[in-house]
Length: 316
Image (cartoon, rainbow, N blue to C red; front, side, top):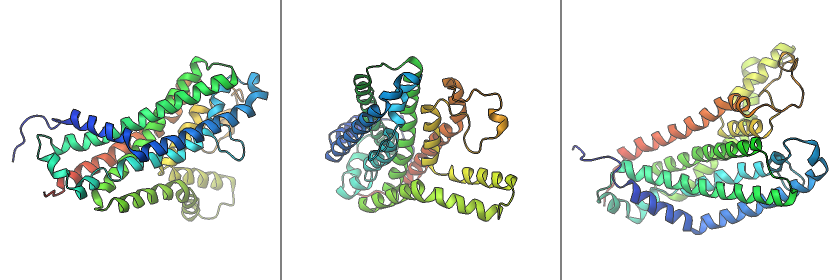
């Protein structure tokens, strides 16, 4: 049967309805409160640690996001933990929840195509994450200005906005994955558990497996050249994980003095001024592969969810 009209008919109403539901949901309010409390605590502790070295660093404001002081980790570490949780909580029951309630067939009975329905759900969840992240970034930046008494420079603001965009790309990967599992599994509890299991595997276990896989492939490393080759291979294998890609990209963006990822050779720092910050453009060119990989992974997972949804039989 041929379809009439645009496949995106109804995208606006679906987006608006889903965005309203997501922003008003109790689980999202709880996660937002937890993230806000944790972020303000991390920034406050970091600011107290930085007071002694504030005048010595030209990029002191960026250290608010990366400085850790026991028992609290850094702001970046908090985001690396909570952002996948928020993304999974928004996507794990996006489709199977409506299917179990019997509302999905009613929605599709309206002049709304599956294309618009799935895209509307994804964009609404992504917009929810973007609003939360922007609000969190503004609150923590303002809190840092009040506590430190020093406003950020133009370079620091640019790096902070780029860090915000990278975090949104990272969230998009786990949102797309949760959306895919909400189509593959009938029960929302199953899709939630599998999504969280995949996240824990890639965030915690995969970097460990990467070391052992590199050792198994290259064999014993008795010489410096073989050790370097093994380290490079382990780094490449570890980059299969979105968590590794995000961590590397954030490291370069928030630490302008970082000039290389992976093993560093003497030729790379022979004429470099140690500790001198790189311009934002050069830092971006260094992490451009990581940025493209995160964006590509999100698009690929959403494309798989789209194909599964188009082939899914939905009965009233």
